[in-house]
Image (cartoon, each protein chain N blue to C red):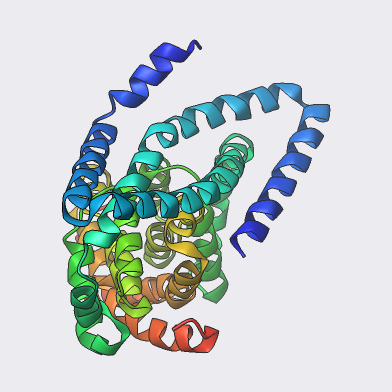
Length: 168
Length: 184
């Protein structure tokens, strides 16, 4: 499935670039400049993160993860996922390898859904750095109030979604 | 741009150093505990994921760069001006999911709309959608690292949440009114 998605994006991107190049070549150069700038961090960090995740997976005790975060742990797993997501103020390049390790060592989809949801809603680095100074206290508190219940809710929905898609 | 300065800026990055040290340390620990076979097996697993990255990342980064360059800056502002009805919240969710770039693009835009007196519901919906459903982040990190299954379960489970946040925001701002002159 992943390769179909990648293929679709590749075809779309190439066609778009050819069409743009025929009409406005200067835009193509600008797009390439952005591309080089955006891809720089992925050259070094992504391979290293993959290495770390790969080495970490066999070291994590699988029965421990399965017991606390597995499908059978039910609501407990969802709450642990939520709390962990709130307590992990790390950038995506560190967060997603952790999720990958947990998935491989026996964590269930509902708990990981809660984990990702809590991490992305809360994002303390983002909140403190950008949101608080720009938008002010009222906005931040309002937004957090509105999405406080989301991570456990998302975990509960994920039980049904995973069942429905047959990937539980 | 010559190769060496670019390479040096990659290696001197703080996160790179941290992740490299962690990779090295876990590698050594794995070798000590489970021996060289476990290390080789871990590397073999890594190569499979790495292929996914090589196939995936350039295309997605290219797509992101196209959107960054070609999307007019005021298009999101137009999207958020649709209002706070059902359609407005759906559009705000869509706009949040597809806004390219990091917080340095999303927040200043919201701030401008906020000062201009936009409704609470679409603003909160937009920021919530941007933080939960951000398409660039999902294509670049989530799918390559955790795979299509978890990514799709996760995405479908959280898809309806941003409009709910908007509706809650509308209710809360009616009950607990924001202080006067907040938006100046």
